[in-house]
Image (cartoon, rainbow, N blue to C red; front, side, top):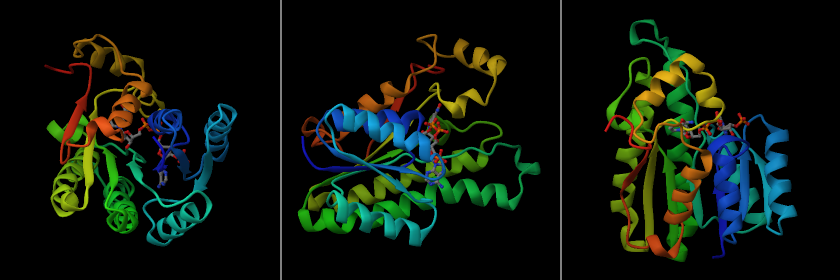
Length: 244
Ligand code: NAP
């Protein structure tokens, strides 16, 4: 495969694995990050030392101006984006009655406004090219909810509705738009839950373990490949059989 992939939040965790997987498939990869400059550099160095092409690109994806600058820089340095992976995300959990407006807004802006901003920016050249792939990382929380997750679950359910709508808007232009809903994947995000919560979660997972970032990355890789050319508007659940 060839083309340019932009992966948001690719300095660590799932995004870093996605960047590596797409580079292995021949994509030039823009590795976006907000603060983890060292992490982004490591991801880029790994790709380049393996013979691939990658650049780090700093931008807060919830900020419209920074997103516009990011797409302009990426287009200038490695070309127009043909695969966008909306991966950047945060949690800030709390029961609704204790959830502040800032806590609500920050999660929605980082997880959902970012998807609107980046997808809109990516689509213009894709529509001209009559080809492209948009892949967004939702969550099982967005499919069935979780206590303490109302802000996060709303943002991730929003991604699913957004994905279906944009798939209908741009299908006639040869662009596919899909989402992935991971369950519990071992990253910094789930580390924050602590061992006791993780043990309780593992008991509910049919495969009896947390997922690995590479196990989400391989699904992104598939959705970006020619083999997935007739799949659009879908949300693929990657959760090891959580609570089947
Ligand atoms: P993670 O290890 O916490 O990494 C989050 C990434 O997002 C980092 O690269 C971070 O960059 C970036 N980021 C955060 N805010 C950003 C912003 N405003 N602008 C640009 N980048 C930003 O998370 P993860 O577990 O890999 O999760 C990746 C995605 O999968 C998220 O959308 C998450 O909701 C989703 N997900 C994860 C799980 C799981 O179990 N881990 C399950 C379901 C869904 P900096 O370090 O530079 O801030």
